[in-house]
Image 1 (cartoon, rainbow, N blue to C red):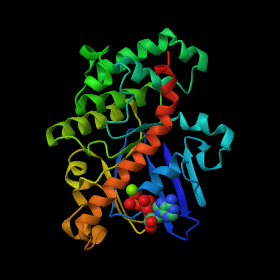
Image 2: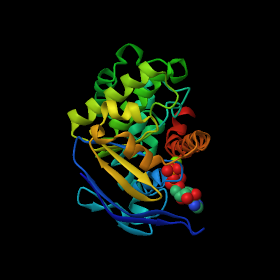
Image 3: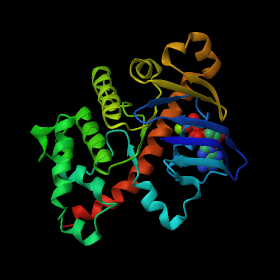
Length: 278
Ligand SMILES: Nc1ncnc2c1ncn2[C@@H]1O[C@H](COP(=O)(O)OP(=O)(O)O)[C@@H](O)[C@H]1O
Ligand SMILES: [Mg+2]
């Protein structure tokens, strides 16, 4: 379970990105996070994995206050959080299996991973996950030979391979076609329900979110202005959240989110890179 209490983020520039945000996500629940550009969505996601430091409030994952974990314990805390990004966040020259196994890098020793000697249990788990996401026929294919939807399935399996207690998912369908987007959203929501995983999805496609998630949180100017079942998200509520936001600004924000995701992914992929060096 994830519990966020009175979360504050004020940047050094003075921008007050999160103004006392509180909510709880139950096991198995998938929350769609929506809101206009500048609402604080990225800041929220980044505070939860401590890519930015909260300036107030608390973030509990289970019993652990993530916001209070020391820098040196951060690696251990982060491996409890699975991140899924836009589907380009894979190591291109590695196979499906190797990309999924890279989810274990937070656990196995450097030398072991360098020699690609993952414990058999890790490999067995990876096989099972690859099957679950529907890629059994592609285990040894290189990432750069996969379609966008298949790549995103690898990203999901990789996140699960690290045995996370929470999934943070940033624009998982931003560059997928509509049918593939629905398949990926369905897969994510089914898996969270099966594994009793709480998840937060930063998603700009409100209609798609409404189709699949259990709950939507609408952020505006650093505050929660809607928190409820997707069916309660009426046009009135939507215009309250989005106001007269112009859609060019929205598109620009999506590009920025993609860059954010790429930056975060680089952090993960860095860990995977040394697999390529042997
Ligand atoms: N690194 C940063 N330094 C200063 N201000 C920032 C930084 N990141 C975001 N902000 C500000 O915080 C607010 C929320 O931004 P952000 O979390 O990116 O919103 P969203 O992801 O919903 O577009 C905005 O006013 C933005 O300008
Ligand atoms: Mg953003």
